[in-house]
Length: 178
Image 1 (cartoon, helix red, strand yellow):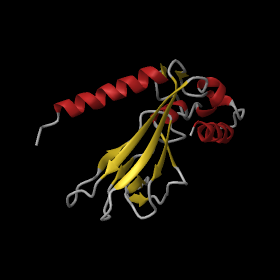
Image 2 (cartoon, rainbow, N blue to C red; image 1 turned 90 degrees about the vertical axis):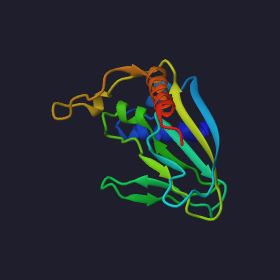
Image 3 (cartoon, helix red, strand yellow; image 1 turned 30 degrees about the horizontal axis):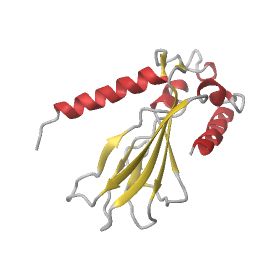
Image 4 (tube, rainbow, N blue to C red; image 1 turned 60 degrees about the vertical axis):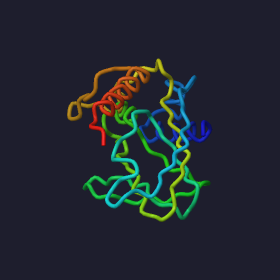
């Protein structure tokens, strides 16, 4: 997954008219990554297996165990949902909040959910890459102009991810118990 991440970082850099290794040199020296093995059973009627959210890191890669297990959906700009097809050999890449912040919204964090409507559980390997913990995240100069001023305050990858995870945990702890 790290080699694939490196290739994707190069493509994302080039698309922003930066040197190919820009993101790699800036924030991919000692990346903080996590692998999650996720099981999404068939939910009750009208219930999401994993609710709508964005990922707080830079890039997430997802592989599912089977071509038959469905469920991953990405939200389009018009608010509708697009079913994403994948299999164990073809990862799906989701950009996260850090990519959006760095690019001043030129790249958008992918809002997604899992809505498993199949009779089979969906099992996935999820690779979260939050890049280097101490890397500074500030709107790139190629993404800022008089018409498009910087929208986000400077932070680091570690500070931002830590704050978002704390916010999520607090929200879960305060949620009403069934």
